[in-house]
Amino acid sequence: MTQYLVSVLTEGAVFGILALGLNVIWGWSGDFDLAYYGYVALGAYMTLVLTIGRHPAPERYILGLQLPYPVAVVLAVASAMALALVIGLIALRHLRGIYFSIVTLGAVYVLYTLAGQFVPLFNGYQGLSGLVNPMADALGIDFSSYQYFFLGFAIAVFLLVYLFLSRVSSSRFGLALRSLREDERAAAAFGRDIYRLKLKAYVLGAAIGGLGGALFAAYLSAFNTSAWAPLETIVLYAAILVGGRGNIRGVVLGVFIVFVLIEESTRFLPEIPGHPNIVLALRPVIIGAALILFLRFRPQGLLPERRYVDPIAQKVPRGSTP
Amino acid sequence: MTTATIESPAALDVRGLSKHFGGVRAVDDCSFIAPKGKVTGLIGPNGAGKSTAIDLISGFKLPDAGTVLFGGTPLQGLPPHRISRLGLIRTFQTPREWRGLTVLENVVLARWDEERESFWRGVLGLRQAQHEATRAELAAAREILEEFGLSALRNERAGNLSGGQKRLVEFARIRMAQPNLVILDEPMGGVNPVLGERMAVAIEGFIATGTTVMVVEHNLPFIERVTDHVVVMSQGSVIANGPFGSLRSNPAVIDAYLGEMPTYEQPGA
Image (cartoon, rainbow over all chains, first blue to last red; front, side, top):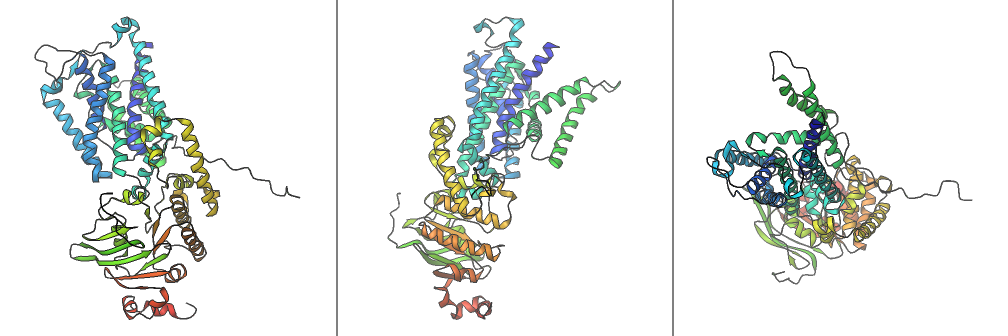
């Protein structure tokens, strides 16, 4: 049971990071990005090719270095940012709304197919493996307590991301991003360089996605195409929507509800004899239903985005003057 | 600037501006000036090309030909945000408030500040300096909201306001931004007469604080009330200009308005 709880919490922290990154792009800047899982996957793949070294044939992949895990994480984040910059430069130039989403969906399918079919890149559909307990040797952590260490590490990274984004959220940069979400023509009329601002948000979101991917790779110790069907992004959107788009506290709550409550509680449903996969199939149904119900009845989510409330100035009570 | 500024006494000097959409000459060799420190009206029947002209001047559309000089600086070819940063701000036919942000935030954000909005300085910079800047901005915005009678609504999300209140928020934003020139695109659309008078007073306030005003409007009594000088457009070109009174008897103007002008001249109208 403890083991199970540790794994749920670790996954929760990783998905929390992923959802927080997507919230920068969709929650604040307002772009419905479907390429997001591509940045997560690139972060995971890059972490692996930078740490696992060379494996014997028939495994084929680029780099095959044996860098320390933290260095690999930094490089993985940088790769995700570089990819987001390229896709963002093209997709954000003139496209908005559904047109932007279609282009990003196209981009992520190109990446997905490339990762699967072009074997010399990341070993094709077989994927990569062999990142076992990173940092354990360097820090002298034994095998039995490693999962607790990694849980602590994941939570620490999650908290850092959270604190960083809470500063972004309350900064003028964060407010300017929201003005793009609300009305970008007005934002341009009042001096905002829409393209640059949106691009910054896009690359920032992708950096956090890449970071989440780097943690994900260490948690799974492996990564392949089955770990990142591009439509996984929709589950992250469901979490943000349920919790409260634009509100980082809400996003964390949404991750708890969608990933922990729905994903994990369905595990405890009784099996129906003769239908071994029905419980697994039920999860997307419940998540989809939650998405529809929230869009219809509470589109602002459980914790709506909070705005600055200017304190009411002290007024002299009526009738107090002689 | 790489391009030399050209001597011009006007706040805005538009020369030979043209824009064609397929076979339609939306704006065709349009030239006019908006004198500094004055209120210039831009009128004309529907389809005269007024809105397209504003889009061309403010960079939201690219002209096919012509020059736009703003305080002597050529604007044609610049993107909207660059033109805005030079001090030319325009509004739109429908109020474009930032719906999900509060009225106070709408006003604060109207003042663009590169330093404040930079990612690194804004997010990782010293908190103390930011708090001070924020306090100053909030104080300025509160004062403007007080002036426009919007203080009680400052924490309300702008999207929840009535049409007339949204127009006032737009005016408050312009006051906060303090541009050299503001182009108001149909500010009277859907506004009642009482609020109209308030807007006329606000326009006088813009002039008093150093903002030259250009106003596009179908409401001719309002144009007569607020403008010093009127430019009349029809079929993409300027057909007349001068003080409003002088245009009433101008046959080209009467012709363009298909008799709408004389109706207005009747007493009590």
